[in-house]
Length: 343
Ligand code: G3P
Ligand code: MG
Image 1 (spheres, rainbow, N blue to C red):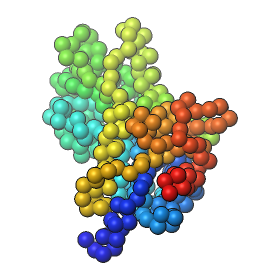
Image 2: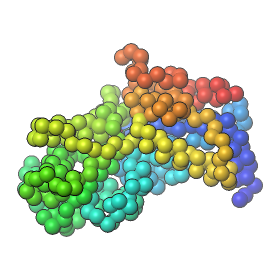
Image 3: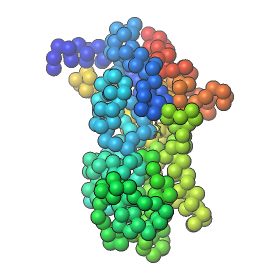
């Protein structure tokens, strides 16, 4: 390791605190950095009274592309290098469950075109199919949509009448809710075969969602519907058809599984920085804009939490449903508060 790396390691290993930043509504709005984000990261890079580099990770319910590609884009938008070892998105946790379905056909949902197929294959899912593959196989599966030339070009030729789907994994926010709800109903009601006879299968199709956000903050003036709203739309249709909701596994903030996974990523990141195992975790501060995902999850994980007012949370709507350690106007104020508190 170079002298500079050793120096960085010495500095960051002595930091009494570490940060976990939410992205949308805290660092970014749409695809542009929030002005206070660059000031906050400058403080963490060393411009602070602790005179140390203060370590941080990014923890988002976003996703849809490979972690390396998202980090490349974030580094450009934030003007700071974000490494994949600092970055957790909604579906990163699926790397820990891939063995179960590595060689079995699974349906992967969300994101643009077949970007999520590439993510799934990168995790080790060898037979990952999309709802656009199903539409390409038999366009009458959903008559009210015509595929774009791009979508046609990236669809994989599969005969779904002979391809039993074992699990449906919603990686990111679906783009075509109608097609996706229709195909989800088809595979679940038939036990995995699109167009197959409806029956109660011996082994039901496993359904997994990676982000429970009903709403999130992009660059529109009001929060937007998130993957949690898609889940509610699917469950409403399924309940109308079957009289009861369909069981599913939920990952993403605020679930304990995701925060436990994030704590391990942070621990590994600290070990990477200081070149050895972490014996005692520093105080962790989660900075988020959504009380339901960022504050509830951090509180449940025993982290400190700071709620900012640049995203979903609007003080005009009254006190947040989950009590943060502190409420700050933006991420810079949140970082300054945490550092002052740990001094
Ligand atoms: O799809 C992204 C959205 O649900 C929330 O993203 O970064 O605020 O967790 P984030
Ligand atoms: Mg957010």
